[in-house]
Image (tube, rainbow, N blue to C red):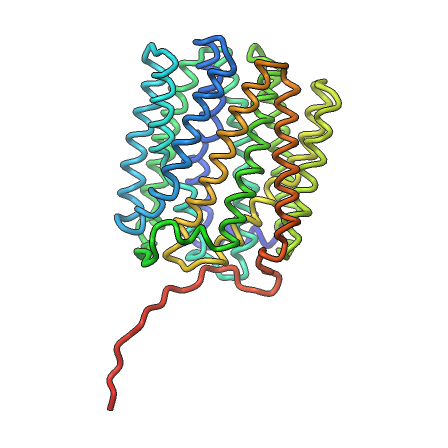
Length: 402
């Protein structure tokens, strides 16, 4: 823990961590808010899952694009534009009487305009700390972001069930604006300039570590998303049980990230972490009892933040600084497509056979991620004795010949 304290004392680090946590807090609320609101309006988890998938697909499509724009137009301009559009779409979802196609269209717009805060902050981090602190900082970030998944589901469940689903979406829009403004106005966002990438758009994702980060992120978040929908379907939205169980899931991730964040990252690090997730999710199939589900998700959660820390570290260590934001955009795209797939598949299976289908979907996603991490272990960079910072951008210079 002393190492984490030293990192937080580094100028600008604590401000960036907490500003981005608030700016991204709506990410932990929006999926449940949309799920509960659309299910209440339509009476179908399948319809709600499709709307939620539209938002996730929008985020997935926009992620690499808006992240790359930050190198061309500047972080503040891109973040401000996307913030305004996204907040407007969420307000429309809350206030307008809509049919299913209308919900899908607005959710897609909200997803397309989601501010690329995650890509921005993880591009800024290497400029705030030395190379030896970068991997622990990524682990700390992955762990602390679980505060979002601990508090946000409880908050949105209480507001949406006890006050109203419309009010839940209004709360999402409010925090989106307040948190986004804090992050955008932070001095570090203005000081760090992302160089314009000289490579063609999309080339960075062809690097094996970035491709692995994208695919495994897809499978890991797909598993988590399917479980989230399954928990809501299991315990309903008339009480606090669903939010509390999801909070326990996040507590496990927070504990795992803080406990294992100092460990060196070798080629087998991802497989070991995903094994914990897979075992925990597999045990959810035994019973739908509240305490059993909570306990098994606590176990599964222990591997999630450490696995995400590996994804962040191998992404940064494999690209030039000018490519970092786009690389994180592609990694985020994989995670968001996974969220869309997990939500949609789980929603359909719940309508057909009950909540157990959602947990089965989660297990399948997790097993697939474990298989990929083992089969392609040689493609993972060994960061145990290596600087995980991005490669510096270099270019030819003209020299005088005598």
